[in-house]
Image (cartoon, rainbow, N blue to C red; front, side):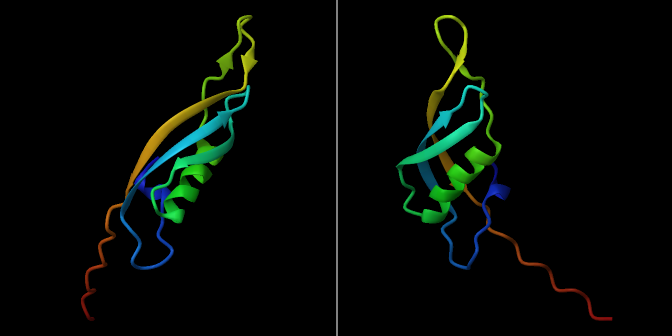
Length: 94
């Protein structure tokens, strides 16, 4: 995940938060579901964590004892640290 994955839809958003999640990985390596295990306290960060995982993350699938690809899971924590957007400098008057 990267800072550009989060865009605050309104002023006054928190600029950081930590989200613990579990992703369910299909046999093809794609994330098919995501659940929040520990919220950041921000619904925006929590929802965006799962949106990015489901939309973009790819994993090497788990394998059973015979080497067949199977569904698996992945747990981790992501720390959102969104940089403050600098305001545009004043344009010179012509």
